[in-house]
Amino acid sequence: MIYPIVAYGNSILRTKAKKIEKGEIDVKQLADDLFATMEHTGGIGLAAPQINKPVRAFVIDANVLSEKYPEGKGVKMAVLNPVMLEEYGEEWSYNEGCLSFPGLHEDVVRKSKIRVRYEDTDFNTHENEFTGIVARIIQHEYDHLEGKVFTDKLSSIRRVIIRGRLDDIIKGKVKTDYKTIFAKRR
Ligand code: NI
Image 1 (tube, rainbow, N blue to C red):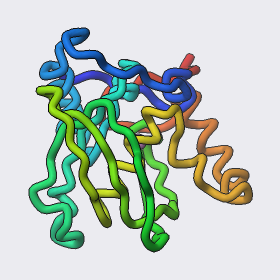
Image 2 (image 1 turned 90 degrees about the horizontal axis):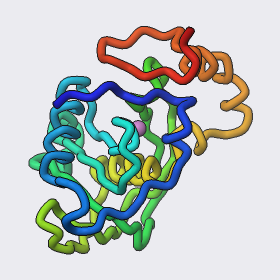
Image 3 (image 1 turned 90 degrees about the vertical axis):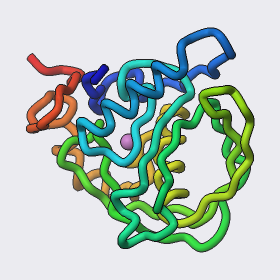
């Protein structure tokens, strides 16, 4: 099922998502819904809180970017209960967007490598290292599960500059080609 996207300004995006215990919810269905919604919206990553489910799950698909970033080739996966073990390597800047921030793209600096422990939808545990664009997408989605968003990482000056655009998103004064839940649309 394709869900509407929760936009910036809704409190669920500021809430730390809950660990998923085995048998508690249908995680295969959740992963299917996240993938379907991500594909519908043209995203490369989508976290459960963005479809109004406050649980620790996200999906990513780095294939679309794999021409420029070969490390993304074949990387399409559902991640449950991730734990960020380490972020290391060089810092690099990338122009990020987010389905919860329609129309906004900002340069964000992050470390280039991560080590992360997570479960798949069969609740098998994995511990892997990821680099480049794959690390970047996981860092962005992981932040969503911590109640953080990419604009938190901008300089205070930059945040002042975009404040009006953030207000427009909160009020729903932006166009999207997917269904969106705005915090204060009249
Ligand atoms: Ni996002």
